Structure formats: structure tokens, C-alpha cells
Length: 189
Picture (spheres, rainbow, N blue to C red):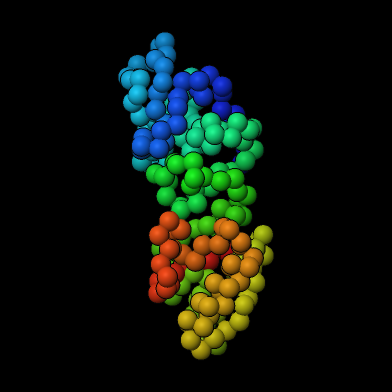
């Protein structure tokens, strides 16, 4: 995806504040900008997407992208920024990282359409067994069929950790990973 480059003028008007719900506060009052309080939250939460965004000169910018740009001072125009813990409200710099589209897909929680309760595991009606699968770079890999869905889960977890690396998500929120994984998700491919 091609993102708008974040203008330096916007960066000059905001400051990172981990206590702000958007991760940003206003540090200057702009001409023609109404309802801006110096020290106030910069941005609003989009009720549809769930992301915080900031309006500036008639354009919208995601706050997590502005936070990342403020800290790293690199061109992120053609770069995806991932929330490590999948929490769109957590725009702390420690929670943000550069990712590819595939890596962002790997770092997803269990889908609501999942019926097994385990990410990457589905019931195969034809074989009457649990099937483990994983997606990597547009390819789907069948990891085997199992009598017990928790055996399939172990194989799926091991494959995700090996193939997805730091972006491996077993279905839970990465911020609060449980030690055991009773409920995980299907890896939709």
C-alpha cells in the first residue's frame, strides 16, 4: 500500500506522549485550526477502523505512523507499521515496528469465524481428523492430519515460530500471552 508521506510541518506541531490515547499531543496552535489545545490529545479515534488518526491540512494520517516517523526519522511512505500486540489503541513506540503485509497477517489474533478454537487447525470432515496448516508468503502448507486437535496445535505453533519468527502469533494478544493455549485461532490463508 502506498501511504501519504507525513509532512514535516505536522511533525513540528505534535509531540510523542505515551500517556495520550493517540500517542500524540499538540505542541503548537496552528492558524485556521480550531479546537486545538496545546498539550491536548492530537487525533481522533476512527469508529470504523479503530485506528487513531490526525487531520492535518485537509488530509488524514494514522497516529501510529506519525509516532513511528517522529522516533525513527526515516521515510515510511511505502512501509507498513505493525502493532506488535495487535492493539490499535497502543501507539507506544515500543509496540510499533516495520512489517511487510505478510508479517502483519502472521501477527493476527484468532478469527471470529474459527470453529476449532485453535489458530491453524481445522476439522477435516472427509478424513475425520484435525488438520494443521500454515500460510507463508502466499503459499499454504499442510502440516498433517491428527486424531487430537491439540497435537495439530503443537505442530502449527512450532511451524509458526520457525517460519513467522518474531511475527508469530498463536491467536492470542501478544501483549498478554498465556503460558498455555487453550483457545487459539485458525490461520486464514
